[in-house]
Length: 628
Image: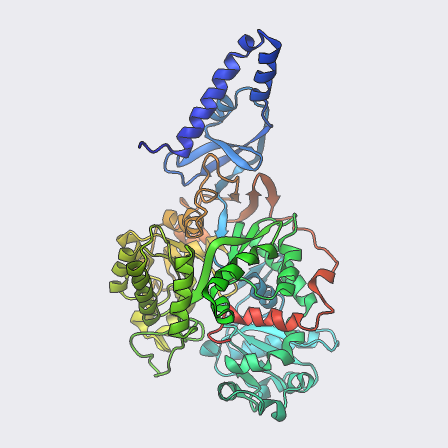
């Protein structure tokens, strides 16, 4: 059977409409035919957007001058004369707002965590990298002394209220250990919480521990593993230790007011970076917290849509019956509405630990001999994979190390041999450390990759000295090898693990420049066009949305990112510097310079619910931790 493309089908349909228009006089022979003709020919008004350049990423027409939009979808793309001729008698207006700008397909945030981003971005950011936020730039911390000086100034400038002062971004691999004594040197009366860059650990001053009731008596109630991952003397709690103190500090770190302010900041930040659609992998499993997120992200004034993926790890842990796992997963759809939704038939599992804490499982030992961690025991991982595989779900898997990748590929192969499926599109997420022989296996098993190119820029220099060694550190996120093997791949930020800035992610993938300014793994670089595809059509493909978004093509949603320059033509080193004017989201023109409305009501965030802060912080920690 001959394959008919969407473009050809629509072109044929529009040609038929034009023929009908030419024969309207004939239809006027009878009143009934006139009525029929009128109903057939009635059409809503269209908007024709013109721009200096339109980069479509549609191979049938890579560039265009104009795009016609009707009811939030693309009607036609081409030269202005072609578009006008295609519209025929259909009413239209020409919008020349973008005459001096470049339109590209709307950017996708394929894998980000808005709740975790909200809590970190609403903190005092003192991190290893610059953060370009709406209205301000937070420069990177240079060293430990710079951190202490900046934190001291911020604490002294804070209001004298009883609220704790929360800062995020400290990285001990860069700046050395941080202790309670150091924070007491800043203040013995103001509670201070330092949330690490990895989100895996917190350090408190004495005032925090006293106010939160973290005493020796409380410490004795911790599990053995939580005690091992806590230091009362240093005020330092990590992994299981952090979860043990969570109920005591949640009101400080995750109040409804902080969450609301952070969600609004995250929304405006992502819009300013040109994002038109996003996804949270591993959705929130506490409905009051999801309701709170929905008050911002489900609102009709949201500048982008957002979907939430089933947290398969939590579901298989909670429900011993396999069928109940799927039934309960499907029922989560009722938790969303408006601009939020459940990602249909998609679920997330976890293999090994996180990159920032160097807990990924690796084949060859770490330089210092420490061990990685598994985020799921092998029987639970195998059960979860089997349940969702047999139910026809697309499975996304958090995996960072090459030994972790071995487990994932072994499980995928076992299920393919047991119950073959076509177009399963199993997604290997993060893809930090891998080997060349694993690339061929990924190809043969039909998996695809969503990589985080920021790992190279931020971590390759330091991890070459600490943990991985130079060879493994420089070859992280081997996109070049994926290209040569013909494996589909996309880019993501894992916000706040990296800035949710698609142009910056492109810059990282194209240049692979480290903090020191050298090129790490030059053979793993990709072209600007491939990187642009990584934040548009390939990201859409990884979410099974390639027929809806990702290119500027007939029938797709009218989602565009509006840029000051064409990222395919500028010096590759300038890609991250291209200004974002704003977006078009389903036909709505949304300048980034106009922040979305801020609502004042807080009742939907359940400020009277004592469990709300604890559940919000628990979810934030779960998405970044190797333990729960």
